Each structure stands twice: as C-alpha cells, then as structure tokens.
Amino acid sequence: MNSRGIHVQSVDKSFGRGQARTVVLKKTDFVAETGLLTMLVGPSGCGKTTLLSIIAGTLHADGGAIEVLGQRLDKMGANAVAKFRSRNLGFIFQQFNLIPTLTAAENVSVPLVIQGFGYRYAERKAREVLEWVGLEDHVNFLPAKMSGGQQQRVAIARALVHEPPIILCDEPTSSLDSENGQHVMTLLRKAATQKDRLVLVVTHDNRTYGFADHMSEMEDGKIFRTLTTHEEILRHHPPGS
Amino acid sequence: MIRIALKMLFGDRGKYVMLVSGITFATLLMVQGMSLFCGLMSWTYSTMRNVRVPIWVADPKVEQCNDNKPMRDTDITRVRSVEGVAWAVPLYQGISMARLVDGTSKMITLVGLDNNTLIGAPTRIIKGRLEDLRMPNTVILDDFGVERLSAGRSRPIGVGDVFEINDREARIVAICKSYRSFTGGPYVFTTYDRAVQYAPNQRKMLSFILAAPQPGLSEHEVAHRIAGQTGLASFTHQEFMWSTIMWYVKNTGIPINVGTIVIIGFLIGAAISGQTFYSFVLENTRHFAALRAMGASSGELCGMLIAQALLVGFIGFGTGLGLVSFMGNNLLRLGKVPFLMIWQIPVIVGVAVLVIVVISALIGIIRIVRLEPAIVFR
Ligand SMILES: Nc1ncnc2c1ncn2[C@@H]1O[C@H](COP(=O)(O)OP(=O)(O)OP(=O)(O)O)[C@@H](O)[C@H]1O
Ligand SMILES: [Mg+2]
Image 1 (cartoon, each protein chain N blue to C red):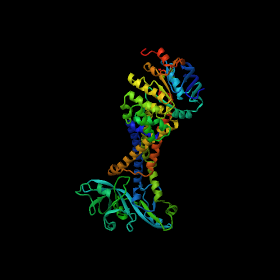
Image 2: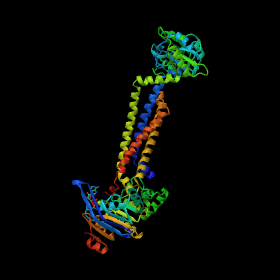
Image 3: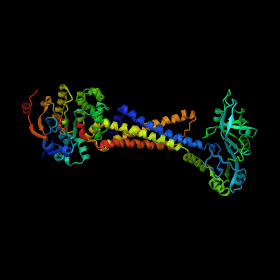
Image 4: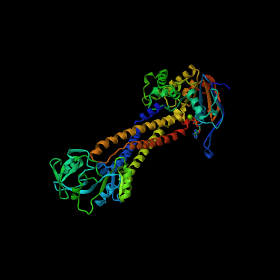
C-alpha cells in the first residue's frame, strides 16, 4: 500500500440495531491521492458523510481497514486518533463551525493552540493564512460580522493554519451562493496543488465539479465509479446539467 | 485552550451574567444566613461579654446566662469558702421596665454589680465616670439605651438625666458601650443593693455568683471544685458561653430557620448555575465537538469546562461576599440586626460554592465526554 493518501478497504458501518438498523457502508473501498482534489459525490443519504467521518477518525467503523498517511486509524486508541487528527487533518464543515465569540484570527489559531503552540505564535500564523485567503482586513472580526463566504474562508484558513497534509471538507459550498462557492473552491484547489496536499471534498454542488481532479461517485454506500481525468468528469457531469 | 474557554464564556454575556448572578445570590443567602445565625448566637451571651469574669456560678438548673433561678445570699459565702477561690461576688440580672418622661415604658436589662468592688462593670465608658455609681440612685446606661430611652426629650438622654425604674429614681452617671442583649432591651448597670431595690420584690434575688481562681490555679479546676463542694452549677467563661449557645440551638427554632435559608441558598445557586451551565454547554456542543474533531482531547475539553466553571464560581463568590460584607457592615448594623461574619463562614460557603461549581462542570463534562465528534459534520 502507498504510505501517502487515504486507503479505505472493505469498511462496514451501520447505525442502530434490530428493526431500526440501517446499514450505511457495506464492504466499501475508497482511495484518494496526495496532490489532488478528490470529490466524493452521490445522492443524499448514500453515506458520504459517514465515510468522511470514518476517514477523519471521528466515527468508528464496524470493520475494515482505514489507512491514512500510512497509519491504521482503526487500530489506534481514541486519544492517539485525536492527536493524529490535530497534526494531520484540517476540517471544513458545511456550517463553518466557527466559535462565535472568537475573532477570525483567534478562530484560525485554534488548531495551533490545540497542538500546544503559544497564543502569540498561533495568532501571527493565523494572520498570515487569513491574508492568504484574502481576509487581511477582517482579522479582528467576529464571525457574526462576516458574510457566509467570508466565514467559510476563515474556516479554510483554520483548516490550513497548521499545514496539515490532508484537508477534509463536507459540503463546503452548499451554504454559499455561486460566486462565493467558486471562490472557496479556488482556494481549496490552490491549497491542494500548491503544497502537495490531499483535499477531499464531499459535495452535492455540481457547480463546483469543474474543480475536481478525481471524482468518486457513491450510491447506497458503495463507490461505483471513479473518474480520474477532467475530461471524464466533464463528460459525465456536463456543466449546467 | 483555557484562554479559548474563557473567551467562549465571556462572549456569551447573558449566560455569563446569569451564572455569576446565580453564584452571587447563593453566596449572599448562605453567608447572610450563617452570619445572622452567628450574630444571634453572639447576642445570647451578651451579658457574659459585658460582664467579663472567669467563673460563673448559678442555680444547678441554670444552663444559660439569660436564665434567672435565684440563689440564696448565703451561697456567696459557701462559694468563697471553696479552696482556690480568689473572690466571689453577687450579680443581679433581670428584666425591668424603665419609665420615660413622656410616660411610656421601655424594657431594659438591669444588671446589679457588687457594691464594693463593682466587679464586672462596663469597661468601655464613653461619657461620665464609673466611680460615680457609688452615689445614691445612680445607674450607667449603654449607648443603645440612649437611643431607646430618649423618647419625649428635646435632646438625647445623657449624664445627669433621670428616669424611673419601677417608680424609683435612676440618675445616669455614665454612658458605656455594650453588646446587644438577646432580649432586645438596653443594659442598665447599677450596684447589687440598688438593683435589688429597683427590681420587683422577690424572696431571693441572687442571679449569679461571679468568681475567680487564685493565681496559679486554672479556672476549669476551680469551677469544678465549686460545683463539687456547693452543689451549684459552676462554669468557666468558655463553658458557660457554649452552654448558653447550645441551649438556644436546642430550644429555639433559630437553627432550623437559618438552616433553611442556607439550604435554600445552596439549592437556588446549584439550580441556577447547574441549569445555566448545562445550557451553555448544550449551546456550545457543536463548538466543543468541532474542537474535538480538530484534535482536542477529552481531558482538554474537561479542563476548559472546569476553568469556565471555576472562574464563574470565583467571580460570583467574590461578588456575593463583597455585597454581603457591605450590607452587613452598613445597612444591617444601622438597623441593629444581628450579623457576625466569623472567618469560618466564607470558608464554608466557599466550599459550598466549589461543590456547586464542580457539580455544574461535571454535568457538562458528562455531556462532552459522551459527545460523538462526528456530529460536527451534520
Ligand atoms: N448517527 C446516526 N444514527 C443513525 N443513522 C445515521 C446516523 N448517521 C447517519 N445515519 C444514516 O446513515 C445514512 C447515511 O448518512 P450520511 O450522512 O452519511 O449521508 P450523506 O451521503 O452524507 O447524505 P447528505 O448528502 O444528505 O449529507 C442516512 O440514511 C442516515 O440517516
Ligand atoms: Mg452528508
């Protein structure tokens, strides 16, 4: 196996038990590579978020192998996984999840603080990254004083500030209008290609499909097709369809 | 992380104020209740604070210093004859009515001191002279008495003024400071013989025998010897003080009433703070989950909650204590309300607040530890 990237093999996950039991993932395989922006797409309820949570180590799989950057997450304890996350993963959520009482710079510095860096260093780094996402004028703004697009850019800055090799995004553009969505995806692509990162984006938003290098299509808890070139993606998902 | 935690808390102004108010209120009620209790208890043995002597001897049935079961005058001689007793003198204590110039009557606590020695006389004379008590029909009034007995006069009653105790003339020769009595009346000091004349006639008048051990002997030992040899009750100052306090604890509703205030304070504080803190945690669940997803450990999240709760407790406790001291020192003292904040009270209440705060934090912690960080993706 490749020691870079994400390799998920034969993962099972179900929720509930007895009558209420829903099987979400059955023997699911999934691969994403470094240096690329991979999109995970599929109809609502097919298990995209579930798979992403398992890759992030925030959700336990019932079985299967989850290898991220050469490490078997399914074999680690909870605290080791938390530590692994704080070093190697950056997150972008649909709901932004910024802490409302912290300024943009403070929000962005959180991952560094979690890793144990001093506040001063963390905030200096935060300002640099905020500049990179074009928010140098908003470092001291509270989230409530910013637009959705600006908040999501703060969230991107937060995901990047500790320079993790992997960025995981769940529906990063679906609360945004088209223009802000394009802006956010441009930044994410830049983050992927510039620094040789792995960016995994779960999305519904076909307006952003053009940003994908690879695309895994999911249905009923299975990856049924992976498109590996822009041409293929465009052929299967023509813009405006 | 702690700094982030505190910013989260301070940022939520409404909850923060609510939490601090809850703790402040609880502190206020608890400290207030306990101080009221201690204040009342300190009033119960005021006579003993005003008349400071090493040993108190009384009728064997007497348990507390406001009780009056008179002994025979010959008992003084019996006490004097006990080996190790340096001196023994009589003390009269009783409730009497003072008649004012406007014709109204006020209750007073009349204290009769030994004619010759004036042992137990007030030590804090603010006007006049103690020695003048040897002149006929004279009394010493305490400063509270000045307030109480001035009715109907153009200026406050003072040295040289006259009022009546049970139709007999009482001329004031000095004003002293004293501790307030539990029964509420001001203290009027005079000599034993005169007190006996002022008081309504009874067969026996000797309320207490005051005594002291000879140099080198312990109060305790001599007090016990007196009890053993005379069959009278005999206490050291400390013993009689505690006996008095315990009598009021056992025989009045004070502990229950005050205990209720204190418990209500604790429960209200715990309810408000616990509830508010829980809803604070609930509202911030997403953010705690996000922190968890970003790699914060459970331990760090618990640390954040504990820091938040402790800070709230600290500020609330400080505010409450400050308020209650201010009230105690100003309003209550002006209104002559019993209030005595001994140092143990803030310590006890501090511990109670700590308990409230820890319970609140624990409720939050249970919630956070069970948290599925995966919820951030929903
Ligand atoms: N904690 C849970 N308890 C019970 N069922 C769950 C839980 N999480 C997810 N599910 C179920 O698992 C299935 C897949 O959910 P998931 O969130 O992974 O879908 P999704 O592909 O992300 O959908 P969407 O595009 O709407 O976000 C759904 O049927 C959902 O109801
Ligand atoms: Mg989803």
